[in-house]
Picture 1 (tube, rainbow, N blue to C red):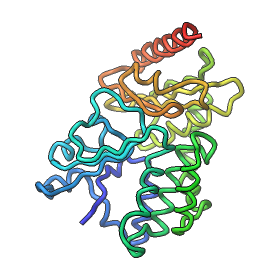
Picture 2 (cartoon, helix red, strand yellow):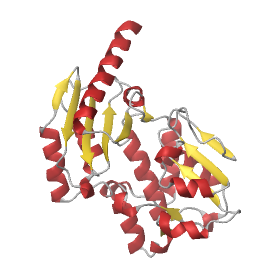
Picture 3 (cartoon, helix red, strand yellow):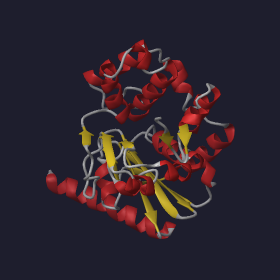
Picture 4 (cartoon, rainbow, N blue to C red):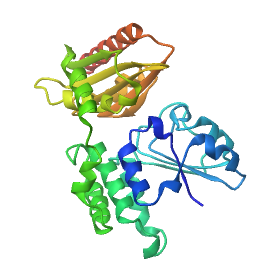
Length: 286
């Protein structure tokens, strides 16, 4: 049987998972700890939306599986998964959800096609990575969205997956209002965000882009075991290149990094140095 390995406590997709549970599909979601004893030589692990072993949901699950498939759209980085039997990598796609949606029409009969809830979740993934079809959209993006719509996806319901509680909205507002502007970038550093509110970190980075004159945003938050940085841009700044300097990665307009054994003050210096290097390289390129 196919199951989804996910750490629900730290997942940013809690709203979506809760919808699946309410629809009776709660048994499809397993924690990494629960799965470890079920892996055999025949187990197939499908990794989506990343190709780096270091940021997988569970490195232990990956190490235990002999058969691995990767489906990803991020620019290939050093140290990527190199033992995949299939490495489906398309950097020009808007999202991993788009790539999966393109594969589904060729798999199985109609009864094996995605349910409306599954199609809706994939559509939400495309909407997230494209900022509601504003960035990185091509003909293939809209074709994938049209297919998911035919499968029953509702755009309004997909949008609701990104709704937040009043408490999380308040924390997001605190992050946004504490921003400082540095070389055309809105930068935030915070150490008073509860770990269960980490979902607001990328949301705050997105909201900062609505400020006039801001070309990119970086939100750095100290969590108990690391400093996590979420980076966003509207295309003028390649935030992936900035994050790669710190050991992270992502996409041209959406990237991030997790800095372990690093204080917030150290992260401050590292991030500013990375922005300086990026701006300097951009000037030299001109």
